[in-house]
Amino acid sequence: MAIKRIPTASVQVGMYLCGIDRSWLDTPFLTHRFLIKSSTDIAKLQQCGIQEITIDTERGLDLPSGSEPPHIPEDEVPSAPDPTTTVSSVPPEVERIQKLPPTVQGKSLSGELNSMKHARQYMLESVQDILQTLAKTGRMAIEQVHHVTQSIMAETLGHEEACIAMIRTRDFSPALYDHALAVSTLAILLGRAVGLKETALHHLAIAGLLHDTGLLKIPQALHRPLKQLSDSELGVYHTHPRRGVEMLTKQSTLADEVETLIREHHVALDGSGYPSNIDPAKVQTPSRILRIVDEYDELLGGHQTGNPMSIRIALQTLYQQGKKGLLDGELVAAFINLIGIYPTYGLVELSTGERGIVTANSRDNLLQPTILLIQDAAHQPLAEPIPFNFSVLSPHGPRPEIVQVLPPEQVGIELDSALEDWMTL
Picture 1: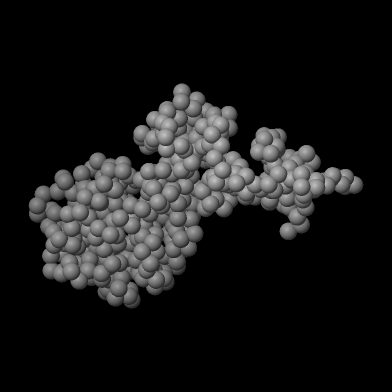
Picture 2: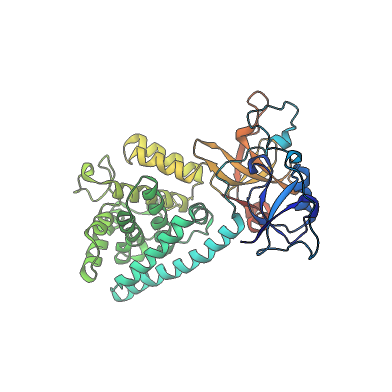
């Protein structure tokens, strides 16, 4: 890196900014490093009172040859404001963007989302190939399974928020591979969140992909919402965990732990699940995780009744099942904390009428995410999106609240375009 300190007055479009003369938390910027693309970026720097910036001349333009920036004495460079100082005259629109979360590290929201879309498409095709081959030939290339699950683990653990967004916003398909990939991904994320080791996560990843392979051995007519099945049809459907294990053990060398996960993924801790010959008290954490994430994705997809649930209702349903003892309550709580009431990339509307995209969640308060406002109270596009930070609003005055989550496509918003120039997380 070839860095150079220059005064703000010398900044030009095309320079790569990698440092400023104060704390980033006291500016409206959501990233620590970025290419200066327009005069608007320069104006922001000047409006913040920044006197000097650091540029990386290997990643952007340098000062014209022969020009030497004037030196600003140290005692004339304004120091970063004291974060404990309260300024009563700060306007609300400025207060919103003060002291953004310290988790800000400069990842492109749009880039993350697009990258995950491409990765997910590749993984979907791979999982589809595995399951179609298994259905047609009864054979499974175990090396291919391990390769795909390693890819899933790498993408999932490296892009957590984008993975969760992809699962939530995807076009739900009745195809088995779509559900399989979602369950595998969510199982990895929840397993890591509760501290499982890499080997256990790998077993969960494989079991997530293969947990419903037994459905390949039951009549296609039973592949419809469970509410529409008769008691006798449900009886056949409930055999799919056993059928899956039998099919896989005949022609592959899966770890015993994976077979156990597949066999137990519909066991309820109160004894109401299936198979009925498994003691719920002996079901270990990985199987409990698989049950929770499988249930969650089925609720989102409408597998039970044919009517897909919203995230909020699905999480509420899981919470109630945890309270009743069907699911592990502590794991359900960890899962809700992982997913977030308002997940990243979700479009929300405030009580003020303004709309914004969730860019980060607070693990301390799931009801107060960080938002990038993109529409005003009349639902008109803002000339410049505004980072909105609930945590810095005064507790004494009126506080806007999130009143609903909106499907972006139904209100004519393209997330990719709205997030194109913004960085966070």
